[in-house]
Length: 95
Image 1 (tube, rainbow, N blue to C red):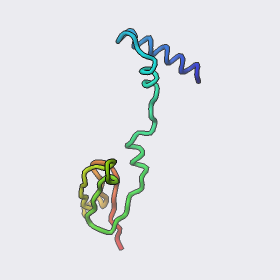
Image 2: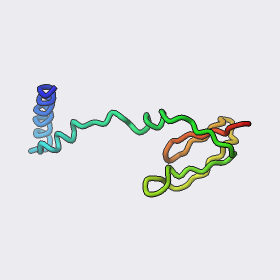
Image 3: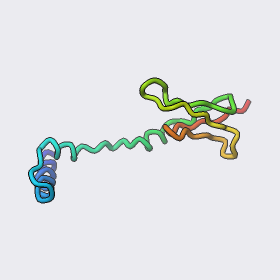
Image 4: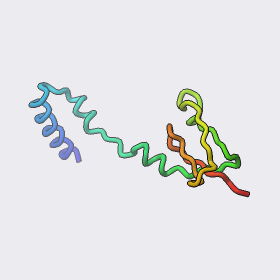
């Protein structure tokens, strides 16, 4: 693997040095680090939360890591509501 990364590093550094001049090794290392866990895929793995009320509020977990509180109406034809900020889904539990 190190030889493959070395080849990628050399190829990338040569291409970038032609385009932008001298390129630092730390910048190239940054370019090679790709996170395979995209946020949209991680949110899609979350189960739909069942709630008892017709209207639910979502603040993304609250605190500094959250988002502004939004209210989601669950009386729609789709029967599930999705938070526009964080993508969490909610469904009304019928009893």
